[in-house]
Image 1 (cartoon, rainbow, N blue to C red):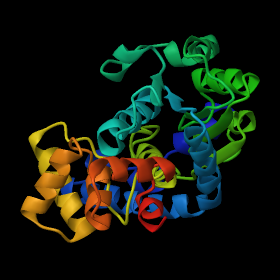
Image 2: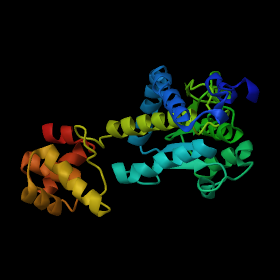
Image 3: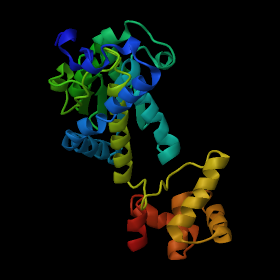
Length: 297
């Protein structure tokens, strides 16, 4: 599809005099335009669920979740991937973010990298994408050669594939098992897809990763029970999570966490079942890490 045919590249009638508007009115307009993003997402919840089902399948069978994109889309994928380790204790090698131009492109644009389909193909080869993996390619335009190259090679290797774009009938949609097409419309600053399009992609990635982690037992009630206590704030959060999950207080919680070597899930099961750490760990292992199953078994 030609660039001038894409909704994300069209001019927004509401912002034609953007350079003459006062600051408050610009902010108000941006806020009103941003408010349309959740509605665009609502229309594709079925597709987002289908993508999430594939991610859960991959993570449950030892596979990986792999994001890939260029520019803003690539950075959003990297951001979501990186956050999965401290939030859900997910090994970094199990959730990856690939960006056209390599890691350096996260901080500084690498011009022309997104235009080379072969770079996407080579990335899949480099990390040895397999049939166990789910590969999610992102491109606001839906036509980025790098992203299409990633999907092409991932398909050849039997991986689950998902395309996230912000235009209807996007070219890359035809290369994926699941196509998520977010109709975010023209940006107030013509073609600046880091705005509504970027926001929509970020929200969808939040949904996919969070629901997937819930689906593999990383959440109990609404608590992030696999959080890594890697700094002072997270140590305190771990204590609070155990307290909330068990309705127990200070000394009991600290003792359980100490005996569990800081492992929040183990401490919760210990306190809920009044059992020693080794028994709690065994129950969690039998329940594949799901606290509710471990406690009710």
